[in-house]
Structure formats: C-alpha cells, structure tokens
Image 1 (cartoon, rainbow, N blue to C red):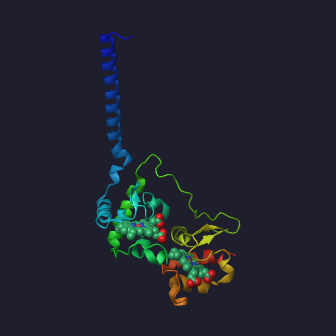
Image 2: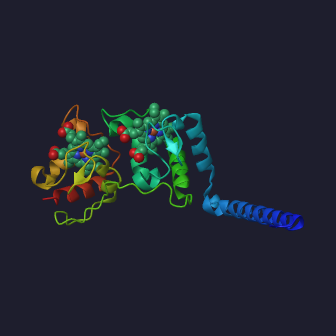
Image 3: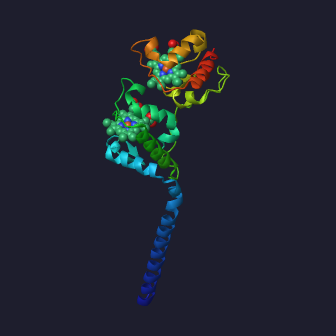
Length: 226
Ligand code: HEC
Ligand code: HEC
C-alpha cells in the first residue's frame, strides 16, 4: 500500500513524465514537417495547382492522402504512377484516354493550368508519408521479356502502356502490341500514330501529342516487335 504522500509523488512524477513525452513528440513532429513536406519545393506553381484543385472540387470524386471521395482514383502518387506526359494528355481530354468508361470531367484547362496541376501532384507525391499509400501492384511498363529485345521509348512507357500491353504488361483498352511489327509495316504505323482517326474513322485511339522524332522512335520500336 502506498502512503498518501507516496501516492501524490507517484501521481506527480507520472504526470510530468507523460506530459513531457507528449510535448517532446509534438515538438519533434512539428520540427520534421518542413523536411517531410519538402517545404523548399513549394513553388508558386504548386500553390496555383492547389487552388485549381480546390476550386474545381476534384475532391468530390478523388482522394489525396485518403481525404476526399472514393469515386475516382487516389491521386497522392499519381505523378509517380502516370508521369507528367500522360497526365497532360489525360487532363486535356479525359474521355479520349478511357473511352466508354467512368467519366472524368473535361475541364478545358489552359496549358498553364494543367502545368500547375501537374506541379501540385508532383509536390504532393514527394511528401514523405511514411510509406502511405501502400504501393499497389500495377501493370509495369517493363518490357524485359524474351519477346522484346529493344528498350521501349519513354513515350511508350509514359502514355501507350495505359492502353496497350506488351508481353502481358499494360492496359487493355487497345489491342496488345506483341507482334505488331509483323502485322503492320512502318508506313502504316507512322500514319497511325500521327492521327489514328485519319486511318480508321471513329477509332477509340486518341490522337496523341507526339513530335516527329518521337513518332520515328516509336515506329522503329513497334516494327521490332516480331
Ligand atoms: C466527377 C468525378 C471527377 C471529378 C470531379 C474529377 N475527376 Fe479525375 N477522375 C475521375 C475518374 C472516374 C477517373 C478515372 C478514369 C478512368 O480510369 O477511367 C479520374 C482520373 C483522374 C486522373 C488519372 C488518375 C490515374 O491514376 O489514372 C487524374 C490525374 C485526375 N483524375 C485528376 C483530376 C483533377 C485534377 C480534377 C479536378 C480539377 C479531377 N480529376 C476531378 C473522376 C473525376
Ligand atoms: C486511350 C487509349 C490508347 C492510348 C493511350 C494509345 N492507344 Fe493505340 N490503340 C488504342 C485502341 C482502342 C486501338 C484499336 C483501334 C481500332 O482498331 O479502332 C489502338 C490501336 C493501336 C495500334 C494498331 C494496332 C493494330 O493491330 O492495328 C497501334 C500500332 C497502336 N495503337 C499504338 C499505340 C502507341 C504507340 C501508343 C502510344 C504513343 C498508343 N497506341 C496509345 C488505344 C490507345
């Protein structure tokens, strides 16, 4: 049995210890915020992107860090997952990228606004969240299989894999491109990539913003898939 004064002492020491620990952890957490949020990378573009995000109620469908609505994908790591190129094409015309699926609003943003949004997603994606969200098992753009001997061009892994698979890796909106070099010659591929609808009116493949060198690189890559 504790005496009265022992109990008092026990209470006081216990309280001081707990309050002390609590204060220490609070201060420690606050001190770590600038490093964890990469404070130095908070550019005006990121702030403008955040404003666009708020103003257009993107959270009405999406979540960031788990906050928001669950209709559309979590976007905390969307920059890492999709990359800036893909997002630029997608935000310009979401439906063209996923014809006939769930709908994302076409906002008619200017190029600058889209760049701000992408800057915002990049910043969000770099925040140190202690491993949140857990890495999903996504279709990887890796093409290191025996059927593919050439490395895929950057544009391919940034944009095309969202819809096309090679050796089982990639999306299934469009046909798998294994053996495309046998089915289609370079002239067709070149024409196709410039403007799919000009080759096949009504096709679901969107016209993508590709430069001449990029098309050339893609055509030689696709031609080698035999
Ligand atoms: C009405 C609901 C809705 C709103 C509002 C909305 N989105 Fe979306 N968004 C979607 C849906 C649905 C998808 C998934 C499309 C699919 O996969 O078919 C999507 C996908 C995306 C993606 C690609 C995610 C991925 O991993 O592929 C990005 C980036 C994105 N939205 C950004 C935004 C931004 C920025 C805003 C606000 C300016 C916004 N969205 C507002 C419904 C919405
Ligand atoms: C939004 C989805 C989407 C994206 C992104 C996309 N494609 Fe397609 N692609 C399609 C669809 C759908 C078809 C089938 C079109 C048809 O037959 O009407 C197709 C067809 C093709 C074909 C013709 C296949 C054949 O057997 O004739 C080639 C080649 C091709 N895509 C290459 C590419 C390349 C390279 C990229 C990236 C620069 C790309 N696609 C990006 C959806 C997409």
